[in-house]
Amino acid sequence: MKPSILTHRASVAGVVAIFASLLIVAPAQAHVLKDFGSYSVALGWAVEPTYLGEVNAVQVVVRDQAGKAITDLADGALQVVVSAAGQQSDALQLLNRFDPDTGLGVPGDYEASIIPTIPGDYTFHLTGSIHGTPVDETATSGDSTFDSVVGSTDIEFPAKLPALSDVSTRLDRLDGRISALSDGTFGSTALVVGAGLGGLGLVVGLVALAVALRGRRKTAG
Figure 1 (cartoon, rainbow, N blue to C red):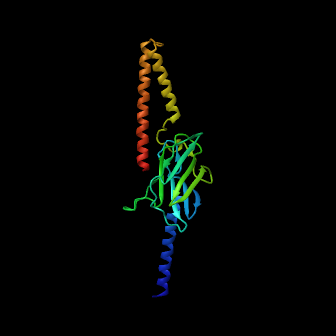
Figure 2 (cartoon, helix red, strand yellow):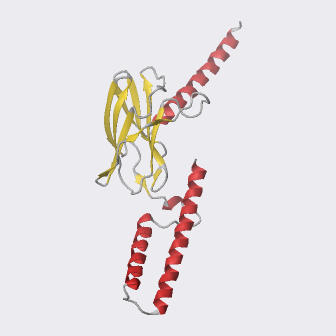
Figure 3 (cartoon, rainbow, N blue to C red):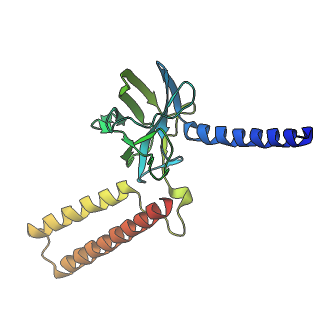
């Protein structure tokens, strides 16, 4: 075989190897990397940037020291507790997202779905075991770890959606007006009609918000 052909094949093989390595490293970007015995774990968000009110997941990618994905962990072998603003979730089971039958998904990818409902820093406490090797790691979002949660106002188009806190405030006000009306505080028919129309407008707004969020999540999926 001619040397030029060998050189060409070697170059092609090198390019393929580079792309393969990029595919392997990609899920670990913006994640915390930690070794446990003979296994390597990448911990972070499944989707970044991480937006307030959007469906997301805590993601853990597991490989051995040779870079081979560990795809046979049982659901719940790894668990994570999420903390934010002084509150913490129940222990969330990390589920295997790779389907060996179809090849869909990232090999070694385990996720626990969550919707972040406040902006700011989030802490993940990962526990469990990998084939008998104990796992215990705590990491908080930041510049050197994974993204903090931010609002989605900058990317909303064409209309800006109301913040969840604003919706909650309006619901509280409407509830107070309805209670006052039922107690006889307001006797005016005009006030009753006005409160009813205001409530109707709020309901319509909430329905529109729900439709918009669903549409965005389906597009993201």
